[in-house]
Image 1: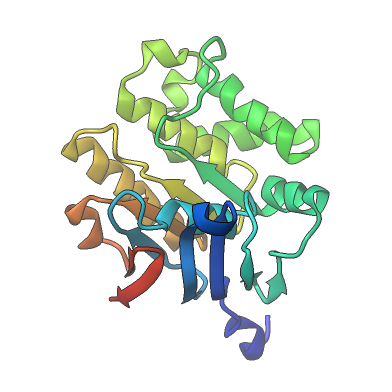
Image 2 (image 1 turned 45 degrees about the vertical axis):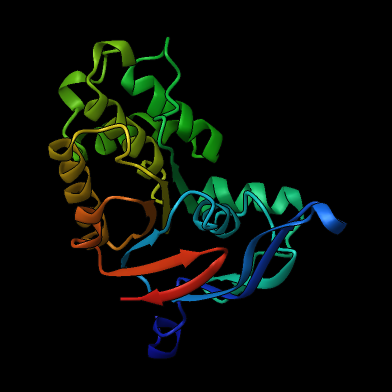
Length: 231
């Protein structure tokens, strides 16, 4: 990688606006949002419900597209990609973590992670190696045969993280990843995120948690669809 390549942000949003509906019923979820996130950073998007942070996260993750503006992943514009190209991008380069864990209840921890690898298009010969490696990283290899109902909330979230990182994506997006956890478990999840950043991943999360904002590298604050400050 050249020095010039290294200066290209992992994620860049330029003038991102998202409008839902039309005419008098239109809702402006985002209003000209701009951000630039270097590689290997842990970044928080904060704001009240309705501030636009989840909408921005969805657009960065190619789950939605802006009404105006552009989003770039390592210098490549992703906001104009076709649906099939956006799906491929998410499968191969992005890991998604949800507030509700979103595990398949009848699958073991290992099977949930392996299922994610299947969706990502990883060769079957790599399933076992990558799934066990990811579960080892989050400290759950010894419990990989347990189903979600046999695991605590914190353990379920760690399985969700293992599923998101197993295919070694460049970017992790996490929507309120500690909202269902107590403060102790929430801080354990943040430690995992910091370890992932040391491994070279870039992580963007949404949060209301003030403790998290003290730990992350950067914070973007959203209010009424606009980024009002960062720090």
